[in-house]
Length: 103
Image 1 (cartoon, rainbow, N blue to C red):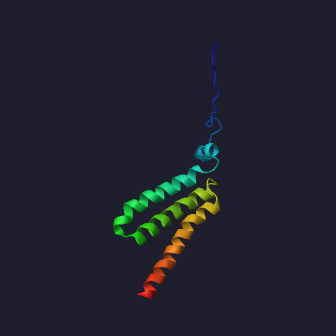
Image 2 (image 1 turned 120 degrees about the vertical axis):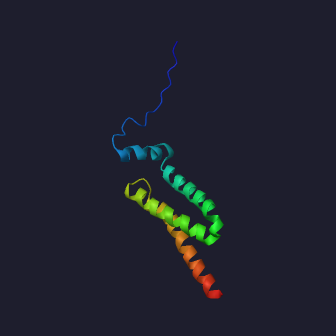
Image 3 (image 1 turned 60 degrees about the vertical axis):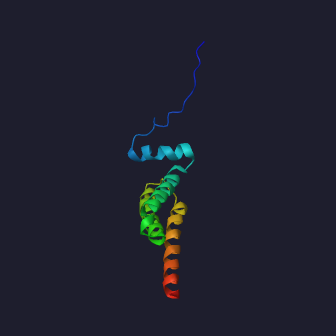
């Protein structure tokens, strides 16, 4: 007796580059690219930490914001997830402005 296990081939309908990039979202219900962007931001933050906390967080959030815009225009990421990085940049700009005013 032979045991057959059905495996879903997610690559069967990937005929374009956008279709290939959409496969992680199909398997993770849309959380693949936001998870990847958050991990990239964390790695960049750690790498830039010797330059200071404020510089590290604003730079990593801004670079992830720009990269996320490309993913939004490819319909791989929603605008609401993009606002995480925009919010970080705006909060840091407000914090730095407030900190400079108080000195």
